[in-house]
Length: 208
Image 1 (tube, rainbow, N blue to C red):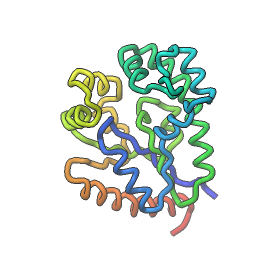
Image 2 (cartoon, rainbow, N blue to C red):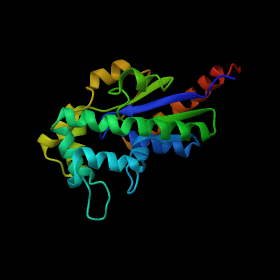
Image 3 (cartoon, rainbow, N blue to C red):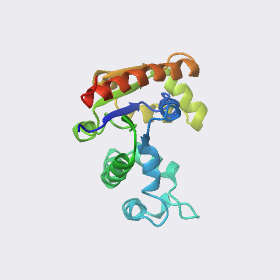
Image 4 (cartoon, rainbow, N blue to C red):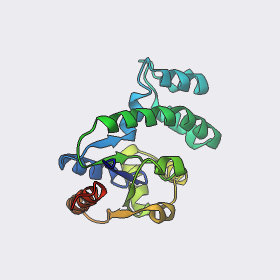
């Protein structure tokens, strides 16, 4: 039997990926979220957190022993080498956990929600059969980032600059979910894709 269809869900920060993933989940589709896994692999007491501390120092840990994500984010977005080091620590751990969850999931297809799917290059893309990009104008991303995280305009621009460009994501996409309207419209777009993916999953299994 052919393996289940894997859909890689991605998009720039504040593009609406979480809303799309939530709707897929409501439709009964297993969603394996790299962001959730990334938090699990650096939970207090994990080898992942120990590696991060060895590389970046105790300043990236809160008084309660948890990873201080804001402090770490400030470090890596101003230092490409530091960002590469962090990715080298976390990506292998995240991949192992996601593969374990994928093997345990049920259903005709699964969503692999990977924010940095495009940035990860070939190894990341090889893990999925199709790439679904949630697309939004960069001006909207900047506005949402400032409202959501309290980021300054400069900080928000630095975050966007550290990710793949909008054009790069769109050129890599097999499917595009435009987030240009309301939340209801975005959810309806997911519903249409769900019907398509169910059909593709059947074809992938050699079913009529």
